[in-house]
Amino acid sequence: QLQLVESGGGLVQPGGSLRLSCATSGFGLNDYHQGWFRQAPGKEREGVSCIGSSAGSTYYADSVKGRFTISRDNAKNTVTLQMNSLRPEDTGVYYCAATFKFTSVQNMCLTRTVGYWGQGTQVTVSS
Image (cartoon, rainbow, N blue to C red; front, side):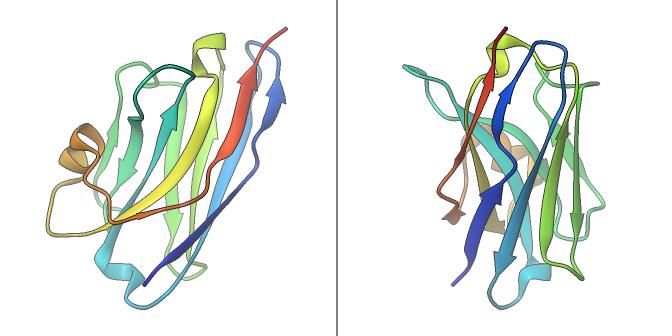
């Protein structure tokens, strides 16, 4: 059983930056891919970025490539999403997620193959 707790959301102006963190607890964390998903009002939850269990592979949605960076620190059991050049369309609830490493990080993000979810943190990009 894993527990995931997000922090770092908030209100930011277009062009600004935010850093989301996810604190993870449980057994065998090194065997889990982790990622960030978001859900805007009236839209389906989508994979933003996912990272492999050993941080050797990453996936980014086309809409965030070059602007967002995912990283993880297995020693500290944290996953971070650095978000730069934020746009209004980045607004939504951001969820931290984890899944056992039986699948690829791309598949995790594209098909929402997730075993554990955090409760989410709101990100609002608005002037």
